[in-house]
Every structure is written in structure tokens, then in C-alpha cells.
Length: 104
Image (tube, rainbow, N blue to C red; front, side, top):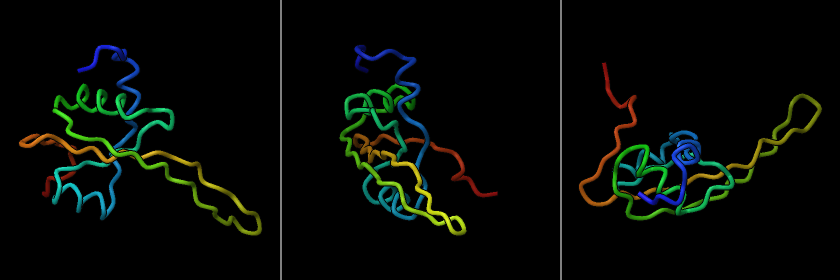
């Protein structure tokens, strides 16, 4: 883990796992996980945060700045916030248990 970042900051970089059909597909095919991250987070910070939070070895990080959508509320227009997501590929043999994958 990179010690240049404080543990407090690293715990706030990753907001939540992003769950979608595409994120499920890339998790199954390429050992990648998709996370919603802070908009001001950099690739090295995201790598360090995932390694710190989940105790895994990260192989690569790709980042997408997602533009917020325009939505209509009755007669008025609104806009969702822009957000950032990170595709994190883990090293061979590594795995993250995100929970919710268990079936009753």
C-alpha cells in the first residue's frame, strides 16, 4: 500500500460498488470490479484505496467521468450530478467479496 495517502482519505475515496449488467459481466469475464468513486480521486488514490479497503493486489485502474443525465420533473427540467466510476482489475488469483452475491 502506498503510504503517501492517509487512511482517513483512502476510506473516503471509494463511495460504493456500481451494480449493473455490464459490471456483472466484466467481473465474471475479466476479474474486474466497478466502483463509484469521488470525482476528485486520481488513479493512484483509487488503487491505494481498493488495496487498503479490500486487502487485494490491484493490477490496473481505468476511470470514466460519467455525465449526469437531464431529467424532466413535470414541466421543469432537472439534471443529475456528474459522477466518476473506476474499473479496477485485480491481480491473478485475487477476489473481492462484495456481499449480496449469496442466494437464499
